[in-house]
Image (cartoon, rainbow, N blue to C red; front, side, top):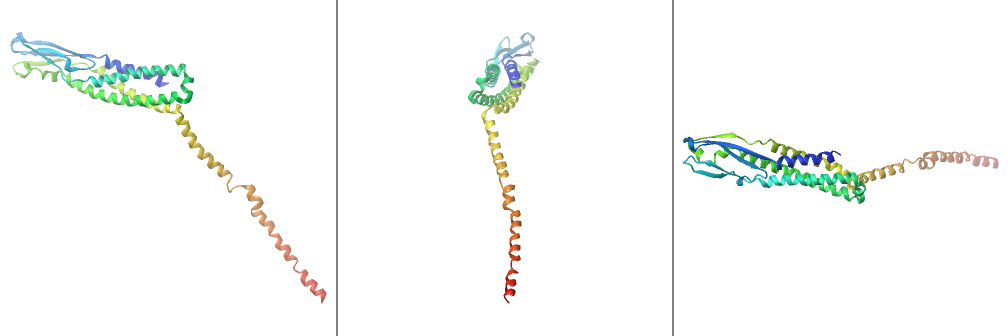
Amino acid sequence: MCMVIFAPLFAIFAFATCGGYSGALRLSVDCANKTESDLSIDIDFAYPFRLHQVTFEVPTCEGKRREKLALVGDFSSSAEFFVTIAVFAFLYSLAATVVYIFFQNKYRENNRGPLIDFIVTVVFSFLWLVGSSAWAKGLSDVKVATDPKEVLLLLSACKQQSNKCMAVHSPVMSSLNTSVVFGFLNFVLWAGNIWFVFKETGWHSSGQRHLSDPMEKQSSTYGHGGYNRDSYGPSGGYNQAANLGQPAEEFGQQPSGPTSFANQI
């Protein structure tokens, strides 16, 4: 039930906080010649974080000439992979919810539904772990590439001590941090659901059956073994006590021999 409720929500939060992100940073270049300065250089970037395609112009502090630069790095692969997993997990969660509610009989028919659900759950658990780890590393690289202090190193004007370069505004990464958190929460949710889906498959019931069969055989063998009262009573020690009386009777017949011999005399 928790899977049905939280899986779609967590998937939405994961791809919304990452796929809908847009950020900006601001730089300031104060040239020795104030007329050449630019104190508000805005650099905007967004998902899928192909930063090498984000260009901006800055003054060179050498007359009116300006140079065109670009940010460093392409982190679209990890970001798009993460968002793709979130979208497909959301769609599968919705489809599974419809099947659980309206097609329960079809789901359990021939045990095919639980087996498919189990395999898909294991696959999504693995994908969430890989995707979240990859995106966490990608986000760390995005933070470095969009750090205003790192971007200032690209400017030729900032290499001259007579010019003053400052980082005015840094990008806000809180939503991206949230996307990583929801990525690992999705992994925990899907991995924890593996056991509950496994119980719905025939593998779980067959395993319990194999464990119960040897115990039943042992109990039946114990009940029909050497502790059988019927076999012990009639043919056991009590019959031996009855047989002990026979030598006594034979012994009692021995005086008849000498008695008859005395009469003959």
